[in-house]
Length: 141
Image (tube, rainbow, N blue to C red; front, side):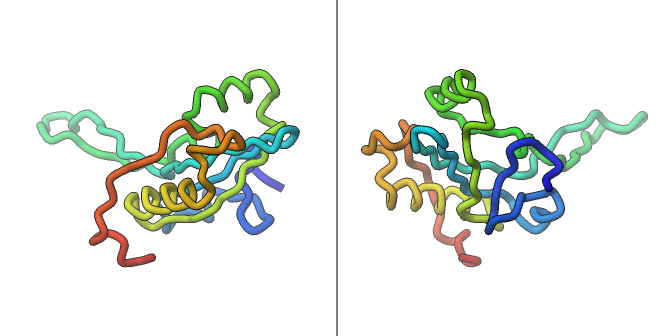
């Protein structure tokens, strides 16, 4: 049982907030159940929010907060249009990789997109792939 609608699935179990504490983000696959059309993307679990300075201080504060990853359905406009038309429950959401760093997320997103030929296949919603990846940040692969 999940705490949110249409959960991200990892190894047959819903991904929950308690499962992501040591990770930065995930690479995911969204699949339209009826047509089989897919989308590969990445989503970061945490973001830094700037807070105003405390009274009498000048330095701004920062707070790390959980992103909207539980409700996220990708950045593809054609995917979003289909979700609007068919409803989010007509899409299966799977975690392909949990990543320790942003660079790992970038790398594995690109790797899965290239390996599946997502950019050239009509089977995928992906319209764009690419990114800059610095190999020095991939030590935990």
